[in-house]
Image 1 (tube, rainbow, N blue to C red):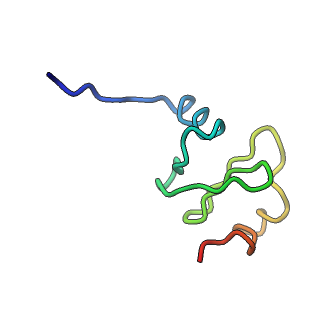
Image 2 (cartoon, one colour; image 1 turned 180 degrees about the vertical axis):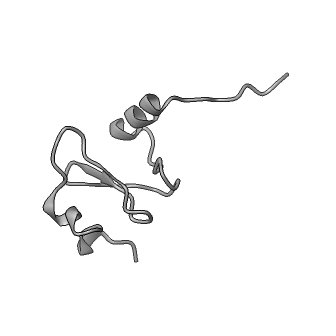
Image 3 (cartoon, helix red, strand yellow; image 1 turned 90 degrees about the vertical axis):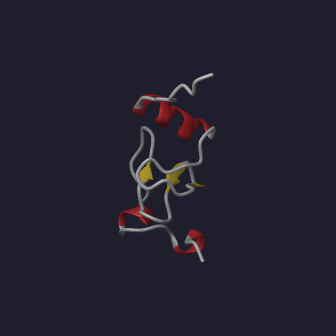
Length: 70
């Protein structure tokens, strides 16, 4: 019995993240937060905002203080 490698494309990874099937940041691998229709990583501050402008609360270079990790 051999182990088959699991290779996903970036499109598949993004789709899984948007659907909520994956909770892992594509940049650093940490857990992501779903905030006001936007997916954000509290560790590396990567933001995924599908088909919309990035909310003003994120444009200052980080997550809103109400959702920052402890």
